Length: 113
Length: 117
Image 1: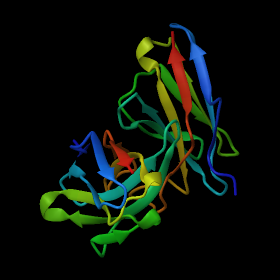
Image 2: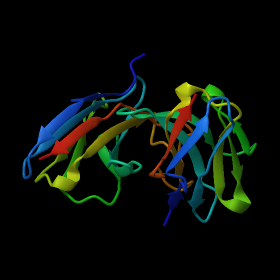
Image 3: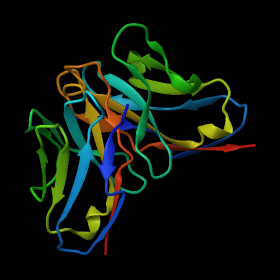
Image 4: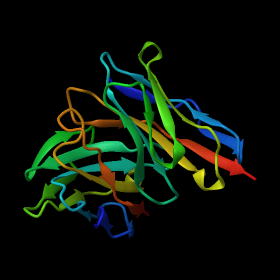
């Protein structure tokens, strides 16, 4: 069965510091991969997605993610975090044979001044 | 360009009651998916509607049912509510079923917060 693991429930970083959020998936083939951001009480906003091609994808708000097939990972990165980046970040996969999305439990990001 | 809109934003029900949640997809989208997000958890897929039919279903009991209308809007119905049904219910829309058959991502609404007393 497909699954998505986000090992870090909560991360705290200082404003201006770099950020890396981890996401690992379990699936036999290469899935389609997504990162979403969720602000309190709101739905999910798509940050970036990977379907094929270049394994380093650029998203909105200065985020990027790298797909590593050998590690079944799709980690999200940002070189310099802003206070407005504080939110919950959710990784998702959808298999290339179906339309069902599988979400991780999310990583809550706190940014301290 | 209106995004995905959900109503109501908050709802309080008691055990055993029935509830209907509503979703209007983003303009130009024809597929609606519903998700349940319990506190501290990621969204769990309930089902997806396309061309007024349920196309895929997650691991949810028959108490959860839905409908899609000709204008692509959708309803989620939950019968015999349980305390464990308390969650944020998210609706997402896409052009065609998102994922394998389309590289169009899903767009999410802000959700309906359902509390069961």
